[in-house]
Length: 295
Image 1 (tube, rainbow, N blue to C red):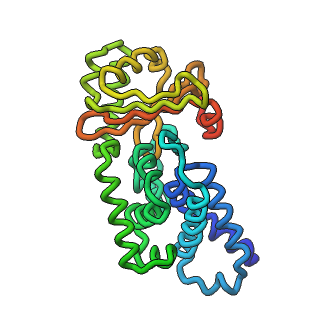
Image 2 (image 1 turned 90 degrees about the vertical axis):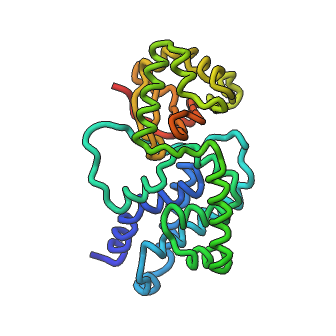
Image 3 (image 1 turned 120 degrees about the vertical axis):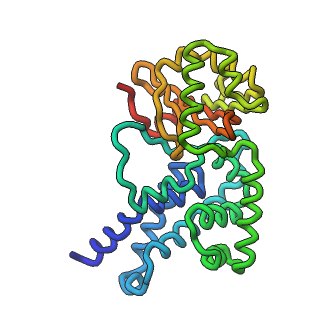
């Protein structure tokens, strides 16, 4: 085995983990893949002698991909406030795989689209500190080196981000299992045309964000339990084709009439009530996600 083969294999062993880090940093599948590719290129140009001196390749690669993602965040500027992040979607079905370190990393912060929207409101260094420490357990001294700050300053960055995340009412507090039960009940009520049943599952201040593409009349934000329930009933026919998926590791639904993906739905549940619903029905975004076709 050549040195190139050895380092290629080592990188591939950490690829899923690096993609998870980059995705939580950037909230975009495409940008996360770009960040991972840039990390690979930087590893390739580092030279065998330098890499041989690396004691912990995973930590070294984490530093590289985090710096790449931080640069991308700084160049990006402010996103549209109502923009939804690109979700990572996995079909549900069959026996669950035996989790390894990378799979555990991918599901470690399984809190859905709502958290990603909140993270987009943080500054780049705050987001990096929160994601690396609170999600992936990177020590604060390493975060300080990545951001060019002291360990104490890195702790303060993560603390500020943590307070903002916890204070946001759209971030779910229910377990994935509880969210699935609530979502299944919501889906059943929509299929039955049960308006009162839908309202009973919605927080009075619930917000629905729908992205059907630029210029589409279906792209909108709806607030309030009766209003959101009314929207759900308008599209009750789609509920017949909806099937469970995981959206960023949390329960969601994919509506695919005639086997063609039409809309992806994720929810945030606090206690026993849905506080936010995110719907992606933009055909361009759905194609980019490579969603599985229906049966």
